[in-house]
Amino acid sequence: MAQNDAYDFLFKIVLIGDSGVGKSNLLSRFTRGDFNLESKSTIGVDFGARTVQVEDGKMIKAQIWDTAGQERYRAITSAYYRGAVGALLLYDITQHGTYESVSRWLSEVREHADSNIIVMLVGNKSDLRHLRSIHTEEAKSFAVENGLMFIETSALDATNVDIAFTNLLSEIYKVVTNHMPKESGKDELKTGSASISITPTPQDKPAGNGCC
Image (cartoon, rainbow, N blue to C red):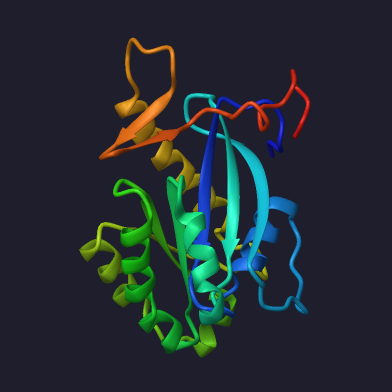
């Protein structure tokens, strides 16, 4: 498993969804390999990072921002959509209300993020399948209708967690390389009226092979 070593691209990813769907544990499972049953609701924003390798050997560092799902913090977290090239939109497969909120979260992404952001719909807590209230096919159909990627995960037992992040990063990488200026010395992805940097900023870029 590649950790935060030297990398070729830096992508900002945001985790969104209602409070209690498991965003913080999904982040900690992917970036630190742990799960905390006593985890409390995130206040403001949490942050994690991990570097993974995609198909052609390029190293992609994901900077992952865990935005608080509670309504009273949404004004704070809206600024964190800026610069994000990917989003994981989570709901709890056992709580139908969190799935009903998906449309609202998706509208918020469309409003605040770049128009070309890649969104993956994630049905979390698949280990609680015996308590399921949202059928997989229903969520999958919603994802297809709205142009989203889709997967079900369990932060508790780690099912599909690495796959979710890696697939999202791989898809972003494909979009980036397809739109990258061929003759420019800068690696920038032009998206609508915005220009999203896809290379490390000076303060983020590791020295040599050290980690940041």
